[in-house]
Image (cartoon, rainbow, N blue to C red; front, side):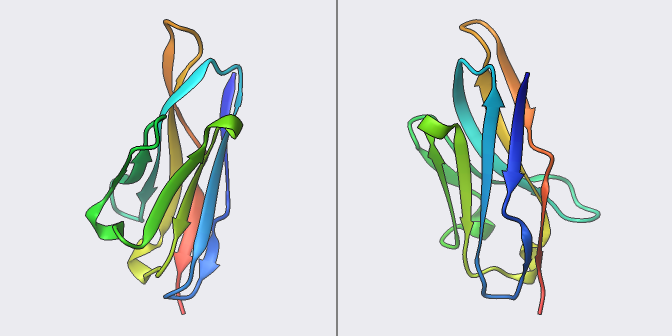
Amino acid sequence: QVQLVESGGGLVQPGGSLRLSCAAAGSIFSIEDMGWYRQAPGNERDLVATITSSKSTNYADSVKGRFTISRDNAKNTVFLQMNSLKPEDTAVYSCNAHIRLSTWQRVDYWGQGTQVTVSA
């Protein structure tokens, strides 16, 4: 069994910063792409940023230059550093990981989500 455990959400003022973490735990053979997604009330879940196992990154246009995704492969953990936060960044942020349980079994996992609220 594999779980993704997120931490780091909360309330922050506009212009502030938060750092999200997501650790994968369980019977893991290897982890391929990892990423962060967000969903605001009434909206669909949108991609925020992704990172490959070789640490190539991809960002949504709305967060480029403000957010940075990184990962620690030794600890099976992905991070999202969020700077210059805006009220429109308010959402539930969820991490995602493509995990190989064996050489032939690949499963898509999601974290439980963490609330990020940007408000004065």
